[in-house]
Amino acid sequence: DTPLLMLRWRGGSQNVHGVHESSSPSQPQRHGSAVLDETLMQNLSCVHDGASEIVPLPEGAMPRTRSWQVMDRVSSALRYDPGEIRVRLSIVKDYIRISRARWMDAIFKLALLVVTVQLMPSVYRLARAAGLSLKGLHLAVSELKLVDAVWLLFYELGWIGPTAVIVLSTFLLRRHRSVYLLDFALFQPPAEWCNSREEIVQILANAGHSTFTSEDVDFMKRLLDKSGTGEATAFPPGIIRCREVGHEQDQSMAAARREAEVVICDCLGQLFAKTGVRPKEVDFLVINCSLFSPTPSLCAMASNKFKMRSDVRTYNLSGQGCSASLLAVDLCSELLQNNPDSIGVVISTEVITRSLYHGHEKSMLLQNTLFRSGGAAILLTNRSRLVWRAKYRLRHLVRTQCTDDESYAAVFECQDARGNEGVRLSKEIVRVAGDAMKRNLTQMGPLILPLSEQFKVVYEIVVSRLSKEKRARYVPNFKTACDFFCIHAGGRAVLDGIEKNLRLTADDLAPSRTVLFEKGNTSSSSIWYELDYIERHLPMKRGHQILQLAFGSGFKCNSAVWTRLQTPRS
Image (cartoon, rainbow, N blue to C red; front, side):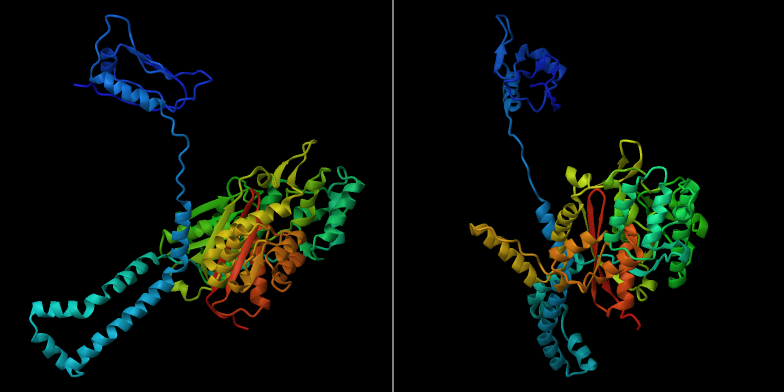
C-alpha cells in the first residue's frame, strides 16, 4: 500500500527532509514546501529539484512503485503556479445590503396588499356559502369531511402560495432592531468662557509671549479674521486666564480634567433632566474625546459622578477626530441592536486646555484659531416604553476610512523641529475631505436617493463611457432625499467647498455657518449644535429626513440619516 502522504504548505524556499525548492533567481518562487511522512521517505531514495523532474539515483536504486507515481503528481503540483486568484464578492454583498435596507419594507407592504386582494374572492364565496352569518359558517364547515376541507382550502388558497412565500421572506429580511434618539443635550459655556476675536488674539499673544514672534501673532490674527467664527466663542479656564498679562497658560492635567468634568457633567445632567431617565438605567456609556485620554478614563469619571450601575458597559474613544460622534453613535447602536430593551448614552466633546501650539510652523498654528470648547450628550434606546417619546429614528449610518498616505497625513498630531507638540493640518485638507465625502456619499446615495436620481447617475455613467468626449460627472441632488443638512462646521473653506460640490444653497448650510460663527469648531459635537439650531429655527415636521456629515483625522468621513418622529412644538 502507498504510505500516507502528509503535506504542509509554507511560503518561501525551504529544505525539509531532503525535499527542497529551487532558490535560483531565474526560477519563480514556489508557493510551498512539502513535508513528507518518514515512512514515505524510507521508500523513496530520490531528490526533487524544484525545476526538474524526479531524478533517479544510480544503480542499485529501488524500482518505481505506486509511491513514485504519487511523487510525480506532488512534483507537478509544486511546479504549478496559478498566480493571483481574486474573487470579489463585496459588490454582491453591497447590493444585498442596500436591497435589504431600502426595499424590503416596500416589497413586504406590496406583497401584503396583493395577498389581501387575492383573498377577497375566496372570502366573498365563503360569505355567500355561509349565508353571511357565523352560524351558517359553522354549519357549512361541520358538514365537510376533513379530506374535503383540506382539498377545498388548497383549491381556494393554494394559488396565492407564491405571494405568501414572498410576504414571509420579506418579513424575515426586513426584521431589524431600530435604534431611536430619545433626546440630546448641549453644553452651553458660561459667559466668562466666551471671548471676542480681539480678546482671543490677546490671549494667544500672552500665552506665547516667550515663544510666539510678532509674525506668528499677525498670522493667527489673519486666520482668525477669515475663520468665520464670531465674537463670543469659548475657551476653557486654563487658556482664558491669559487675558491678563503675566499669567501663564495652565496646561496641567488637573486643568484639563476640570474642563472635561464641567463639560461632560453639564451635558449629562441636562440630558437626564430632559428625558427623565435615571443614571442607574443606563446600560452603555460611550465617550469620545480625541486629544485627551487620561487614566482613569472619562467614562470612569462620569460613572463616578453620577453613580451609575457597576455593570454599566463603558467605552472611551480617542484619536478619532471631528467625525468621532457618529462613530460613537454607530458603536452604541450596534450594542443596542444586540441587546434589546436597553439604553445607551453617547457623549461627544473635545478638551483643548492642553492643545495650544507654541511653535512657529504655520500649518500647526491654525489649530489655535479654530477649535473651541463644546460638548453634546445623546441618549439612544430601543426600550419599548420610551420609543413613543423618541425624537428621531436612526435610518442609515455609513462610515468611510481613507487609507492612502495623503489622507492619513492630512490631520496629524506631532512635534515640530523644536519639540513643540501640536496638530499639523495639511494644505490639501479641503481636497482630501472632498474625496472622502465623495466615497461616503457614494455608499449612502443608493440607500436614500429616489430612483429618479439613481437612474440619472447610471445614465450619465453609461453615456460617459460610451462617448469619447470627457463629461462632467453628474452629482445627484441630495435635497430630493433629505430635508435638512448638518455639515460639520470645520471651517469656512470646507463649508464653501461642500456647498459647491453638493449643489446646496446658502439656506441649506445656514445651520453649519451659524454654529461656526456662534460656537467655533467644537469638533465632534458641532453636528448636534446644528441639529439644535434646526429644531429651534426651521420648520421641521414629522417624517423629515436629516443628514449629518462629519470629517475627522485618519482621514474619515461619517454620515447618518435620521427620521423625525414628532412635529416639534412651536
